[in-house]
Image (cartoon, rainbow, N blue to C red):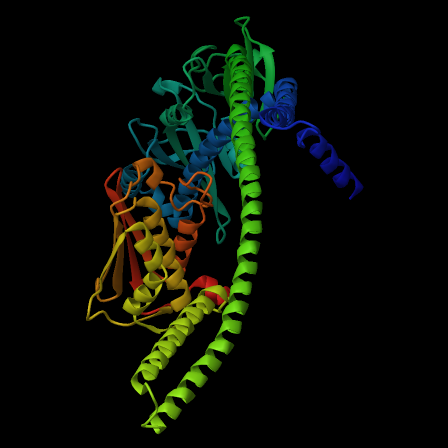
Length: 579
């Protein structure tokens, strides 16, 4: 907690208001301090990150470049083993699904081989060899029936391991191929036989091609004796012996860096097969590997420079916006403070006016009672001298009392604070009542105040006091906009099934398009030195709170028209629910 407090204190000293400095220079110093702090906070970590990445990239390079090579070699090796395993499984199935006599029947064997070639690629021939190593039946392009394999090394391996996969060789076929042989034992007679098939190595070339290596790279299959099993771009043809390509045994993909027979530094990824003598290799020139390093280094420097430039521009603009908003906020806060003082004064005056109105009502009630008593006494005495003159004077007194009562009641309605109260209202009555407050000013300035009120206007559910404030604010603005002898017109109408409309139009100075964009903003005013800029903002908020809408049409020099749309049914807004 102490560290947090110290940090906040240091931050406050850096960006806080400079002591004893006022005006524009004060905000310029704040902007400078914030800019320096933000640049330090953003650029220093960026530089440290770039330096760390630069120093550690060479170690990360092995994982980023060499690991994909391992993955690629493992996938290719798995494809090779899957191919060999599937072919071994096919021969095991044939050996176990058919009896010895069925396979010994060459006609039947040819039928099996024909179906085998239709369903699986790569098979060249198929043969049955008895327990003595003699080929009993054969299906293929050559005449190998009766061939004796008992002296071949692979025959002994099949007898011991139950399966044999040869290396690539040419034989008398003169094309690269491999031999797969599986042994099957008859549990009833303790006899055994071997199913042997020859498979071409096109699938090996397909596996290499599917690796999708770059033109400058090489991939091939070699056996554990260093004999190439497929063609290599860099190291020779099929069956060429390359002892320099023999690497330590590893069934998982391994990577080694070396200089090859061409005196070229290369990176080699390799993996030994689990089911055969094959080794899959992937060779990539070291220059290609380092190319990524040089590319990243230049990109890193470019990104760093661009990042620093963007940060500087962003920080300068952001701090300018922040300080400008701070300055505007300070000005608005000062204006709001003045407005609050003004509001307190008005509130005090309102309470004073309410008290005065209440005190005036009491003697007015006594005057009204005494005048009524005098009228009753005169009417009871028909012979009262100058009876008619006194009755007319008493009538004038009661009318004056009624007028005073009306004025004080209206004054109380505006002065006191009233809770929001939704009730059925006649908007025409509210308009008339509000306009009556402005009749004296209109008469004094010779302003024509006209009202065009719809006779069939439906009653609405709303708040009387707030509607009075809305109409009074707008009409006051209209009075301020027109010159002496001007015109202010108020119109009401049934707008649609959900709303009624109230229009307040004047022929005053009007407003420009730029002014219209800001009229509802708090503290925005065109009455320099006289207005607070809160009237229309408050008006807009009241109308929205009551569920209505407000529109304005104005042309500079031709007047302004405010249109207030009020809902016929009041829906409780979020503000009222929260309150």
